[in-house]
Image (cartoon, rainbow, N blue to C red; front, side, top):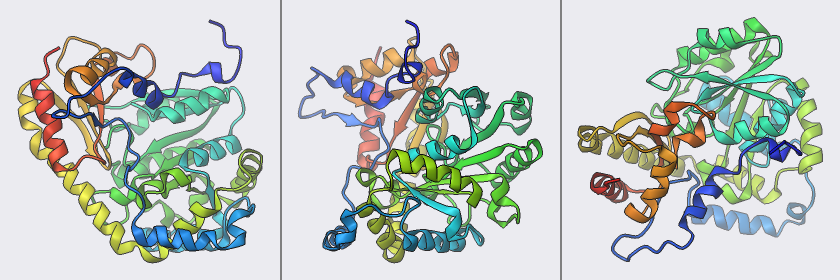
Amino acid sequence: MPVTSRTDATFPPPVMAARRWLDGVSFPPDRPLLNLSQAAPVDPPPAPLRAAMADALGDPDTHLYGPVLGLPELRQALAASTHRRYGHGPKAAQIAITAGCNQAFAAATAAITTEGDEILLPTPWYFNHKMWLDMTGVRAIPLPTGPDLLPNPEAARALITPRSRAIALVSPNNPGGVEYPAALLDAFFDLARETGIKLILDETYRDFHIDAGAPHQLFARPDWAETLIQLYSFSKSYRLTGHRTGALAASEDLLAGAEKFLDTVAICAPQLGQHAALWGLENLDQWLAGERAEILDRRAAIAEGFAPLAERGWALLGLGAYFAYVRHPFDIPSDALAQRLVPDAGLLLLPGTMFRPDGDAAGARELRIAFANADRAGIAELFRRLMDFQP
């Protein structure tokens, strides 16, 4: 079917497509559905944050348009928080608050591309990045990763053309879970600077990195803003997914372009979410440390419990933040396998075919497990069901 609109240029939203696999399927009480398809926290924000949000509703300004680039107090607080985490960081004037991190990516790419331009995306890629580029006429150039799911800067160099505008990395990675070493991020920054393109670094899951310190030192470079575009999300850290609060750090010149995009799409990020993010930055460091510890414990449960699956031919390719990325041993494509797992095992997982270009054979053997909403007992149950499954 020919492309007749921008939305026709891309595929349906994968998470929504997977949810339709549940239609008409019933799950017995002794084997309820384990939904490990999406990383969004299902629990509400902590009670003190909800109380602060209720107080914010009493402020008339909460219900009005705010500054396009975000509340000045939140931009300042995020700048200060970033400085504490990395030892360096952007000024408040180099930060924009967006309606979620996906919008931060959209705003950043709108400010640096036009139709026919190219952005390199490591595969397996985050499908919403691919979808946005498809709909804006920007070519997503697949950058294959190795067995460790890490991209190679020299492989990226070979793909850069006069139409290249950026390399987009996600660390900790979605879907792979892997955390990009600081030295690798340095190498990609150097490559981007040398070739005159941008390095987009999506750090949505940085608060769940296995190392408590700074995940990189890119902000220590005096010229960081000429090359680096950093993306962040408050959704995972403070359970604000429904309030759509993200952030973008870049040069002031780039933010001037992003402001045009943001003003025409949403005018401003939702005010209530911004007030919640500000309160969280000011009051929830200890609570967030506990959340991180719980996620790291779930990560450990995946690593500790995987051996029996490995003996059956499964492979753990990547693990970190909210995700485990695995290779299955069956002679069945992962998209068909994922659909079979719904009625046969009570599991909803996403297939690797949703994270790879059409025709990439690797995707047929891969599954993503989003374990953020599964505790140790849930992870043990996941492994039991996978062990029992026979295609």
